[in-house]
Image (cartoon, rainbow, N blue to C red; front, side):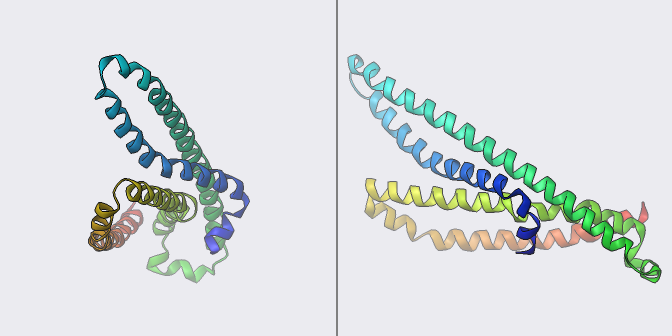
Length: 198
């Protein structure tokens, strides 16, 4: 919540990025439906193919324009908001370092190299905590919700079978996240040591 408060001046950019995420979340399920329908058009007799293609080609164009606009909104807005947050956090961190007592710098963990590395690395890691991760979550949930609706409309029995495999995917994702997080801590220590040496 403190990070969200720090990013509050860019609330309108985060809002636009979330709108872009909503568009992007709905695009993949819609694309799958349209792709299936256009394949059905090609199965018709040759005289009827062109009549059906105009509608679906126009819908593909609309999906492409919407996906492009959503990608631009999400990428641009979250990047600008994140970079502003990073600059703000670096400024606050630097001011906090300058206010420390002189004896604080005698500690080996507070050498100038390690502090410079922290200023360079830690603030930029925080920027993903607000906008871009929230956007990815919304994109994922909208895509999942739209996919479930489409799946239930086309075949509710097959959808129920596939939902049974969701716990397997969740466990696999959790194990992958745990493995990645373990390596991130080791990398941070190595970067701090390298900063101290340099």
